[in-house]
Length: 598
Image 1 (cartoon, rainbow, N blue to C red):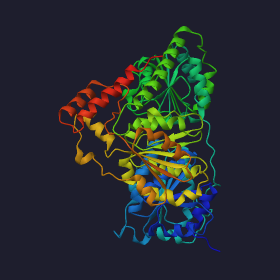
Image 2 (cartoon, rainbow, N blue to C red):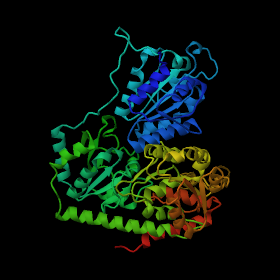
Image 3 (tube, rainbow, N blue to C red):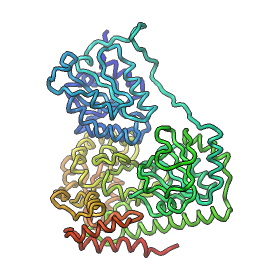
Image 4 (cartoon, one colour):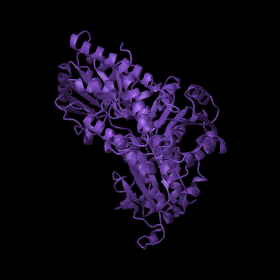
């Protein structure tokens, strides 16, 4: 019995262990969609929009550690995938996009939905993008797309014309111009740096008195080694946002996030250190690294990204865990040494004071609810195996600073593209990755109106497939595009512009209830904690519609003079919220400096 190209494609994906394809149908992929209905897998997950399909694939890949696959039709469908695929590219996430194309006989004829997809995808999927033209190109095309995505941690794309999907499959023959393929499978090589370079790094670290370590998602498999290094050097550990869930926040030497959304202990540690070690991180904000002149070492698996954020003396290209294990055999313990011990004591004191300050700031009076309180009350209630997503915007500030992750918890956001609209689809992808674990999406009302409300329908559709039904979408309802409003004030010296920043007020809880989910409106500070308790014990997905004060400032760990100048200009220019801003901003900042020191 003959096999179509589409059937062979799905069979090959099964061979690679692909369980889900996140997508949206269209006539450019009819051949594949029709075979999906008859095959034993992968299972098709229908989003409300192709961009959400790509985000769901990214979320699935981030939380599962496996390949994400998304699919869209030709023309507009393929275009819609792009934002999610760029998110995968910039956060180094393996995703394969399968995209339909018009019939081969129509290509070049300017017919309906003809888009030069190969050119369109050349940037986002530049590591591997190919357009199929004959059946014999399979399975090599799909194999190479998958191997490239996994080995280079990036998005790749296969473009398949509609008529080719329905053609009979014919495998490559043993002849010139045919490319066969091996069985599915890929075992990553273990990369380690040269021994003499490891020794150079150890010599540098052994001379340190004040060590600062920055980790990112690349240190995920090296937690024990990072802790051992921190204990040996008596240093502290800061975390990139994509590495927030890598290391337990209960360690007293973990200073928290770096950057504009970071913590004061991290800023102080990086400012005052004499030695800087970067492990598996590529945070792009050079101004938040230590001042130039510190001695520095970087460890990263990707030679393309090493030595490009800070003038490092030693660059170790290799697997983080194995490289650190080799390094640790050469690093001497500084326990008991006066200088390093005093440095560690200062870090731990600063961390304790910071968490006290965060608690105090979360309880600053607001109208009606301080958004920091929402995160502050959630943090101690987080289930041990929770998966948390944050959308971009002001939610990311509070996610970065107020949530304390412990071992076993996972969390992510759009770290580098910082795109709006990823929080809810990420959580959906997370639930397909681990249907037995609870998921929480922290989302601003701007992102919720952009696409989150539509994806609640997707949640409603698939909720019964998840053994743990808990998926909580918490909406910070302040009727303001809040992060951009604050950026206008602090970086542009511009007052709030209501015509661009104000959002229509919507009952997100009411919408959730109308489609069969559970919804709850939270409008009083005393109602926040009980609402979290109810949502975390619910037997179906829940939307918490929390009415927040837009005038609570996301104050960075260090405020530069030009930011103060711009903020003053914004207030003087007649910002409509200027009086509330001054009062609440002053209260918030005072809490940081009046919190009792331990």
